[in-house]
Amino acid sequence: MSWFESFILGLVQGLTEFLPISSSAHLRLTAAFAGWHDPGAAFTAITQIGTETAVLIYFRKDIARIISAWARSLGNKAMRQDHDAQMGWLVIIGSIPIGVLGITLKDAIEGPFRDLRLIATTLIVLGIVLGIADRLAARDETGGRHRAAKQRKTLTDLSVKDGLLFGICQAMALVPGVSRSGATISGGLLMGYTREAAARYSFLLAIPAVLASGVYELKDAGKGHVSWPPTIFATIIAFVVGYAVIAWFMKFITTKSFMPFVIYRVLLGIALFALIAAGVLSPHAGESAG
Image: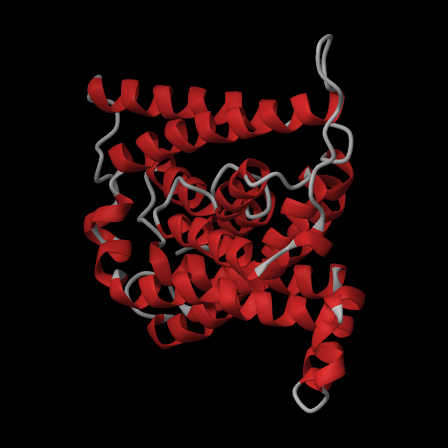
């Protein structure tokens, strides 16, 4: 991998990690369209350490408060009723599905799941799901001619059941094209949470899973065509860009709809199918050398 490739892939990772459009799919597609080798699951997981570091810094006050309350609740029963302490447990519980499935489906994640036809399918399907969830949220928030606005849930309403359901949604992102934030935010909206609450919990829930995955994949870094220096460079780029995207996205969702992302996902999926059908792009482009 050249320095230029690592720069572009790091930029793509930072731009797409927190948007509901799938960073793993865009890394795969960028390489395929550019005629580069597939960077692979290990490269993707390690560069995500950069974007998750951005999450740690952006939400540092929330994270410090949650960890402190959770740690104190281990020896203080009264603290177990504290919202932040409960949030610590809910993040742990919600991380179980992706941990179990990530290990179980490791071979599929690194192989069949990277087929561009599957990615096109997940882009379209999750896009439609996100669109439906967003419309339901908008209807609750604005009401209508014959119905009053409905109060949506916030993170103070988060239960063990909902935390686990969020975790199951996050695990779906093991398939490139689904999108970690897209799946968890869609799940949260369908469960009745506000856009801001669903996005915030999505980002917090991703921290253990992404960091664990990145550390686990460190053993495979430097193998094949992807060496350590370009991987580190791409991770730094992903961190810088990712931080800016988080700040923008958290402001965006307070007043805007997810429909632009829905339209983008569906159009990209259709275009991908068309290119494959026309023979312009192979569904396994770059895989053999990746």
